[in-house]
Length: 294
Image (cartoon, rainbow, N blue to C red; front, side, top):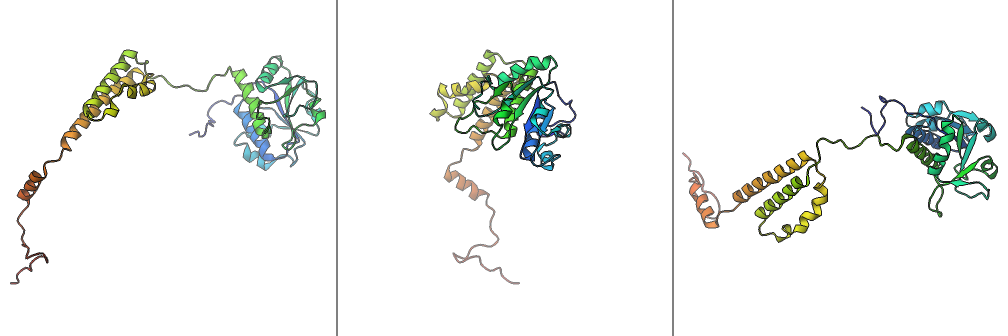
Protein backbone atom coordinates (compact mmCIF):
# COMPACT_ATOMS: atom_id res chain seq x y z
CA UNK A 1 0.00 0.00 0.00
CA UNK A 2 1.50 3.38 -0.97
CA UNK A 3 2.37 5.75 1.83
CA UNK A 4 3.14 9.45 2.29
CA UNK A 5 1.85 10.28 -1.19
CA UNK A 6 4.21 7.97 -3.10
CA UNK A 7 2.34 5.52 -5.34
CA UNK A 8 4.54 3.43 -7.63
CA UNK A 9 1.48 1.83 -9.24
CA UNK A 10 0.69 5.12 -11.00
CA UNK A 11 2.39 6.54 -14.07
CA UNK A 12 5.41 8.78 -13.56
CA UNK A 13 4.52 12.27 -14.78
CA UNK A 14 7.39 13.88 -16.64
CA UNK A 15 6.54 16.48 -19.25
CA UNK A 16 8.84 18.80 -21.16
CA UNK A 17 10.28 21.44 -18.88
CA UNK A 18 13.38 23.41 -18.00
CA UNK A 19 16.71 21.83 -17.17
CA UNK A 20 17.76 22.34 -13.54
CA UNK A 21 21.47 23.19 -13.23
CA UNK A 22 23.15 23.17 -9.82
CA UNK A 23 26.45 25.06 -9.88
CA UNK A 24 29.08 23.58 -7.53
CA UNK A 25 26.58 22.23 -4.97
CA UNK A 26 28.29 21.61 -1.67
CA UNK A 27 26.18 18.94 0.04
CA UNK A 28 24.96 15.66 -1.38
CA UNK A 29 21.88 15.96 0.82
CA UNK A 30 20.82 19.11 -1.01
CA UNK A 31 21.33 17.50 -4.41
CA UNK A 32 19.11 14.60 -3.36
CA UNK A 33 16.46 16.91 -1.93
CA UNK A 34 16.48 18.94 -5.14
CA UNK A 35 15.97 15.75 -7.15
CA UNK A 36 13.07 14.86 -4.88
CA UNK A 37 11.20 18.13 -5.50
CA UNK A 38 11.92 17.85 -9.20
CA UNK A 39 10.15 14.48 -9.14
CA UNK A 40 7.29 16.03 -7.15
CA UNK A 41 6.65 18.51 -9.94
CA UNK A 42 7.41 16.53 -13.06
CA UNK A 43 10.90 17.76 -13.92
CA UNK A 44 13.43 15.14 -14.92
CA UNK A 45 16.59 16.77 -16.29
CA UNK A 46 19.29 17.59 -13.74
CA UNK A 47 22.77 18.86 -14.52
CA UNK A 48 25.58 19.20 -11.96
CA UNK A 49 28.58 21.49 -12.31
CA UNK A 50 31.55 20.32 -10.21
CA UNK A 51 29.76 19.05 -7.07
CA UNK A 52 32.13 19.59 -4.15
CA UNK A 53 31.92 16.09 -2.68
CA UNK A 54 32.14 14.28 -6.02
CA UNK A 55 29.64 12.21 -7.94
CA UNK A 56 27.84 9.83 -7.45
CA UNK A 57 27.06 10.66 -3.84
CA UNK A 58 25.56 8.33 -1.22
CA UNK A 59 24.00 11.16 0.77
CA UNK A 60 22.24 12.40 -2.34
CA UNK A 61 20.71 8.95 -2.90
CA UNK A 62 19.41 8.88 0.68
CA UNK A 63 17.91 12.37 0.50
CA UNK A 64 16.20 11.73 -2.82
CA UNK A 65 13.66 9.47 -1.09
CA UNK A 66 13.00 7.38 -4.18
CA UNK A 67 13.71 9.92 -6.93
CA UNK A 68 16.63 7.75 -8.02
CA UNK A 69 15.99 7.95 -11.75
CA UNK A 70 16.69 11.70 -11.72
CA UNK A 71 20.02 11.17 -9.96
CA UNK A 72 20.90 8.22 -12.19
CA UNK A 73 20.32 10.31 -15.31
CA UNK A 74 21.98 13.47 -13.98
CA UNK A 75 24.67 14.90 -16.28
CA UNK A 76 28.02 15.99 -14.86
CA UNK A 77 29.95 19.02 -16.20
CA UNK A 78 33.31 20.62 -15.43
CA UNK A 79 32.14 24.19 -16.00
CA UNK A 80 28.93 26.17 -16.41
CA UNK A 81 29.64 27.19 -20.01
CA UNK A 82 29.57 23.56 -21.09
CA UNK A 83 26.42 22.88 -19.04
CA UNK A 84 24.41 25.56 -20.89
CA UNK A 85 25.98 25.13 -24.33
CA UNK A 86 22.82 23.60 -25.87
CA UNK A 87 20.36 25.96 -24.13
CA UNK A 88 18.66 28.84 -25.93
CA UNK A 89 17.30 30.52 -22.79
CA UNK A 90 18.93 30.60 -19.34
CA UNK A 91 17.57 32.03 -16.08
CA UNK A 92 19.72 32.66 -13.01
CA UNK A 93 18.22 32.49 -9.50
CA UNK A 94 19.69 34.84 -6.92
CA UNK A 95 18.78 36.75 -3.78
CA UNK A 96 21.21 39.58 -4.68
CA UNK A 97 20.84 42.30 -7.32
CA UNK A 98 24.35 41.78 -8.82
CA UNK A 99 23.99 45.27 -10.41
CA UNK A 100 23.37 43.80 -13.85
CA UNK A 101 20.97 45.32 -16.37
CA UNK A 102 18.80 42.23 -16.73
CA UNK A 103 15.02 41.85 -16.38
CA UNK A 104 14.05 40.44 -12.98
CA UNK A 105 11.24 37.88 -12.72
CA UNK A 106 9.38 36.17 -9.93
CA UNK A 107 9.00 32.36 -10.03
CA UNK A 108 5.53 32.49 -11.61
CA UNK A 109 6.71 35.01 -14.23
CA UNK A 110 9.71 32.81 -14.95
CA UNK A 111 7.45 29.83 -15.67
CA UNK A 112 5.33 31.93 -18.03
CA UNK A 113 8.43 33.27 -19.77
CA UNK A 114 9.88 29.79 -20.34
CA UNK A 115 6.63 28.13 -21.45
CA UNK A 116 6.61 29.22 -25.14
CA UNK A 117 10.28 28.30 -25.53
CA UNK A 118 9.65 24.83 -24.12
CA UNK A 119 6.57 24.44 -26.33
CA UNK A 120 8.77 25.26 -29.32
CA UNK A 121 11.08 22.38 -28.39
CA UNK A 122 13.96 24.52 -27.15
CA UNK A 123 16.30 23.62 -24.33
CA UNK A 124 15.91 26.10 -21.46
CA UNK A 125 17.68 26.07 -18.11
CA UNK A 126 17.44 27.54 -14.62
CA UNK A 127 20.67 28.04 -12.68
CA UNK A 128 21.05 27.62 -8.91
CA UNK A 129 24.22 28.61 -7.08
CA UNK A 130 26.23 27.30 -4.17
CA UNK A 131 24.60 26.93 -0.77
CA UNK A 132 27.05 29.32 0.85
CA UNK A 133 27.02 32.31 -1.51
CA UNK A 134 25.01 31.47 -4.61
CA UNK A 135 26.03 32.37 -8.15
CA UNK A 136 28.98 34.62 -8.91
CA UNK A 137 28.69 37.73 -11.09
CA UNK A 138 30.23 36.15 -14.18
CA UNK A 139 27.82 33.22 -13.89
CA UNK A 140 24.77 35.48 -13.64
CA UNK A 141 26.11 37.34 -16.68
CA UNK A 142 25.59 34.19 -18.77
CA UNK A 143 21.82 34.27 -18.10
CA UNK A 144 19.10 36.04 -20.06
CA UNK A 145 16.96 36.88 -17.02
CA UNK A 146 17.30 36.97 -13.23
CA UNK A 147 14.82 35.15 -11.03
CA UNK A 148 14.35 36.13 -7.41
CA UNK A 149 11.75 35.32 -4.76
CA UNK A 150 9.48 37.55 -2.67
CA UNK A 151 10.99 36.77 0.73
CA UNK A 152 11.83 38.55 3.95
CA UNK A 153 14.63 40.95 2.89
CA UNK A 154 16.30 40.54 6.28
CA UNK A 155 16.45 36.76 5.82
CA UNK A 156 16.43 36.06 2.10
CA UNK A 157 18.64 32.98 2.02
CA UNK A 158 16.78 29.88 0.88
CA UNK A 159 17.93 26.30 1.11
CA UNK A 160 19.03 25.05 -2.31
CA UNK A 161 16.25 22.45 -2.58
CA UNK A 162 13.66 24.99 -1.42
CA UNK A 163 14.64 27.34 -4.23
CA UNK A 164 14.37 24.50 -6.76
CA UNK A 165 10.96 23.61 -5.29
CA UNK A 166 9.60 27.13 -5.86
CA UNK A 167 10.58 27.11 -9.53
CA UNK A 168 9.44 23.52 -10.08
CA UNK A 169 6.08 24.15 -8.39
CA UNK A 170 5.30 27.21 -10.49
CA UNK A 171 6.28 25.36 -13.65
CA UNK A 172 4.12 22.32 -12.87
CA UNK A 173 1.17 24.47 -11.84
CA UNK A 174 1.33 26.31 -15.15
CA UNK A 175 1.86 23.16 -17.23
CA UNK A 176 -0.92 21.20 -15.52
CA UNK A 177 -3.39 24.06 -15.37
CA UNK A 178 -3.31 23.97 -11.58
CA UNK A 179 -5.60 20.92 -11.47
CA UNK A 180 -5.57 19.29 -8.04
CA UNK A 181 -4.87 15.53 -7.90
CA UNK A 182 -8.11 14.82 -6.05
CA UNK A 183 -11.20 16.55 -4.71
CA UNK A 184 -13.81 15.84 -2.05
CA UNK A 185 -16.14 13.10 -3.38
CA UNK A 186 -19.84 13.97 -3.59
CA UNK A 187 -21.81 11.04 -2.20
CA UNK A 188 -25.23 12.68 -2.51
CA UNK A 189 -26.83 15.91 -3.64
CA UNK A 190 -26.47 18.97 -1.36
CA UNK A 191 -29.26 19.38 1.18
CA UNK A 192 -31.75 22.15 0.48
CA UNK A 193 -32.04 25.08 2.88
CA UNK A 194 -35.49 23.88 3.93
CA UNK A 195 -34.06 20.53 5.00
CA UNK A 196 -31.18 22.14 6.89
CA UNK A 197 -33.50 24.59 8.66
CA UNK A 198 -35.83 21.72 9.62
CA UNK A 199 -32.87 20.05 11.29
CA UNK A 200 -32.08 23.18 13.33
CA UNK A 201 -35.70 23.62 14.40
CA UNK A 202 -35.79 20.01 15.52
CA UNK A 203 -32.43 20.27 17.28
CA UNK A 204 -33.42 23.45 19.14
CA UNK A 205 -36.70 21.90 20.31
CA UNK A 206 -34.99 18.75 21.57
CA UNK A 207 -32.32 20.67 23.47
CA UNK A 208 -34.86 22.95 25.14
CA UNK A 209 -37.00 19.97 26.16
CA UNK A 210 -34.07 18.17 27.75
CA UNK A 211 -32.38 21.24 29.26
CA UNK A 212 -35.34 23.37 30.27
CA UNK A 213 -33.44 24.96 33.18
CA UNK A 214 -30.28 25.77 31.23
CA UNK A 215 -30.83 29.19 29.68
CA UNK A 216 -27.34 29.18 28.07
CA UNK A 217 -28.42 26.49 25.63
CA UNK A 218 -31.50 28.31 24.40
CA UNK A 219 -30.44 31.55 22.69
CA UNK A 220 -30.66 31.68 18.89
CA UNK A 221 -27.02 32.74 18.72
CA UNK A 222 -25.96 29.25 19.76
CA UNK A 223 -27.46 27.85 16.58
CA UNK A 224 -26.32 30.69 14.34
CA UNK A 225 -22.75 30.02 15.46
CA UNK A 226 -22.83 26.44 14.17
CA UNK A 227 -25.02 27.05 11.13
CA UNK A 228 -22.04 27.57 8.82
CA UNK A 229 -20.64 24.18 9.80
CA UNK A 230 -23.76 22.23 8.84
CA UNK A 231 -25.20 24.55 6.17
CA UNK A 232 -23.26 22.74 3.43
CA UNK A 233 -24.38 19.26 4.45
CA UNK A 234 -25.49 16.82 1.78
CA UNK A 235 -29.03 15.42 1.62
CA UNK A 236 -28.15 12.19 3.44
CA UNK A 237 -26.00 14.00 6.00
CA UNK A 238 -28.97 16.22 6.86
CA UNK A 239 -31.21 13.15 7.19
CA UNK A 240 -28.67 11.50 9.47
CA UNK A 241 -28.27 14.61 11.62
CA UNK A 242 -32.01 14.93 12.10
CA UNK A 243 -32.28 11.27 13.08
CA UNK A 244 -29.38 11.72 15.45
CA UNK A 245 -31.07 14.69 17.14
CA UNK A 246 -34.28 12.69 17.57
CA UNK A 247 -32.54 9.61 18.99
CA UNK A 248 -30.32 11.72 21.27
CA UNK A 249 -33.42 13.35 22.68
CA UNK A 250 -35.00 9.97 23.43
CA UNK A 251 -31.84 8.65 25.08
CA UNK A 252 -31.43 11.81 27.19
CA UNK A 253 -35.07 11.76 28.27
CA UNK A 254 -34.87 8.09 29.25
CA UNK A 255 -31.68 8.68 31.18
CA UNK A 256 -33.25 11.64 32.98
CA UNK A 257 -36.17 9.50 34.16
CA UNK A 258 -34.08 6.56 35.35
CA UNK A 259 -31.52 8.77 37.09
CA UNK A 260 -34.06 10.48 39.39
CA UNK A 261 -33.16 9.33 42.98
CA UNK A 262 -35.87 8.10 45.35
CA UNK A 263 -36.41 9.97 48.66
CA UNK A 264 -33.98 8.93 51.36
CA UNK A 265 -36.64 7.54 53.70
CA UNK A 266 -38.20 5.35 51.00
CA UNK A 267 -34.82 4.17 49.79
CA UNK A 268 -33.84 3.25 53.33
CA UNK A 269 -37.13 1.42 53.88
CA UNK A 270 -36.76 -0.48 50.62
CA UNK A 271 -33.22 -1.48 51.51
CA UNK A 272 -34.22 -2.68 54.94
CA UNK A 273 -37.17 -4.60 53.54
CA UNK A 274 -34.92 -6.44 51.11
CA UNK A 275 -32.08 -7.16 53.53
CA UNK A 276 -32.02 -10.89 54.56
CA UNK A 277 -31.78 -11.81 58.23
CA UNK A 278 -28.21 -12.25 59.40
CA UNK A 279 -27.03 -15.70 60.51
CA UNK A 280 -24.61 -14.04 62.93
CA UNK A 281 -26.34 -11.34 65.02
CA UNK A 282 -24.25 -8.55 66.47
CA UNK A 283 -23.22 -8.66 70.11
CA UNK A 284 -22.43 -4.97 70.27
CA UNK A 285 -20.08 -2.57 68.67
CA UNK A 286 -17.06 -4.83 69.15
CA UNK A 287 -17.91 -7.24 66.30
CA UNK A 288 -19.67 -10.47 65.54
CA UNK A 289 -20.54 -13.08 68.20
CA UNK A 290 -18.67 -16.34 68.03
CA UNK A 291 -20.47 -19.24 66.47
CA UNK A 292 -21.35 -21.84 69.20
CA UNK A 293 -19.28 -25.01 69.08
CA UNK A 294 -20.96 -28.39 68.93
